[in-house]
Image (cartoon, rainbow, N blue to C red; front, side, top):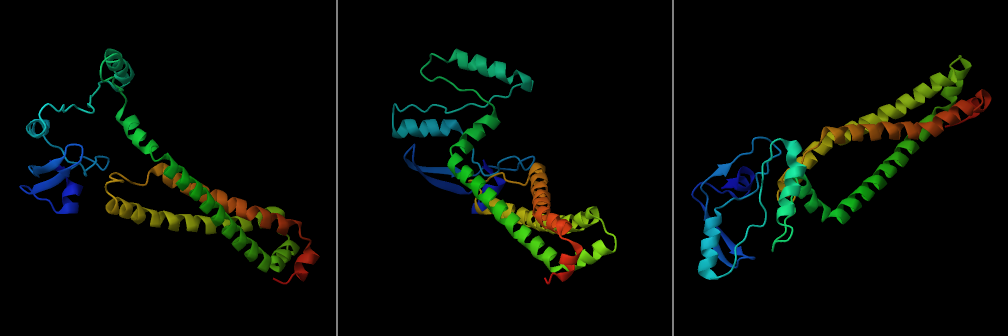
Length: 251
């Protein structure tokens, strides 16, 4: 039985024969597709293949008599979920002195253990992300600084007309936040097709990949913070510039 995404990727249909070359269990292996499953929601991995353990055992015994064919891990369903720590401790205590001690953990922890193997890659991506955010902040700050500098005389005229420092702060910060928010929204709009493309191009590494609501909130928050920080220096400079000096300034 194979997943829908795996079937679509290789064009498998019911009754097709899948041929593999064994690694852990050497030899030529043939599997007949008897079913194609579809996940109940997007969190179900549809790139897996399941087969009868009896088939593996019988073939190994025929090819390599006496070779053990043991299970690597078992899946348990615990009800209620709060009983999971107690059940895990009971299982591990029972096999602590056996030939094959167990390590019982939740499915989430089990998956995270594989992710931890790529911790160096993840750390590199995080560092690169911080550097990119810093570069974007510098570009945004430069854009706002140039825009404010070009309109220094206009701000001086506004001061002459009675606009207070609070009004000028609001104008500059509003422009900066608007630019940052527009950039953040464009980036988010491009994120969804990029994530979908990663999922289709690398289904083995990213069988389940999506943009979480927390990620969207963090992205928008980062955009707003970047806009606020970028406008801080230009706004302070405009407020502190005397009216006469502002009117003499040529952008």
